[in-house]
Length: 270
Image: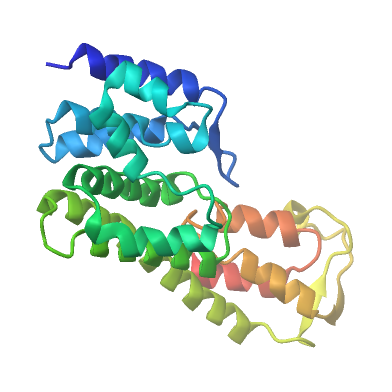
């Protein structure tokens, strides 16, 4: 049975995170509170039933990202919940690089409860990269996933975390790394196919959907380096990094400019 304390924790988190959103480049907007709620759900799905741990998962970002104070959590949910939340909260006196290093170096020394919460947090974050793509560069997404793996590996150095939980995390992070690898391959394809100075056919400023119209004049000129850069930005069809559909993005960026070369490239990828 769900405890009244857990329900109160969900209510508390919903109020504290009420104005926060995760907004993707594909215009997906997700209320931030769904992230800590999912962290608790992940733990419950892995058989974790400790009320304090599930409550700490729901509240794990309240000290770091809201105006909540230590005493708020202590008074409402007790010292143990506060201790767990503080264990998974980054030190605000450190810069981001130092915080990331500390997550790895401190990982093996965290309490079992904090390790559970932090792993569920990282798993939810990995899933959100896919569901709510932030528009980061492939390098940044790859670094983000690899750092999360370092943190979880450090926390599980003794093999004490539930196998189902670690499996969820590794699957979610691997999906991101596989997508980055695919994007890098497609980028290489684009660079191989398009060269500065390549002759292309242009349609002036006419709408892309009128390519088949005989009334429009076609001229030829050489493709520029800048246009190749735009092609690369359109390569990802997975919605992971750009959040855009390839065919739609080609029409938006090149529909009024480049005709035959891009349409041929599109046919090759789809």
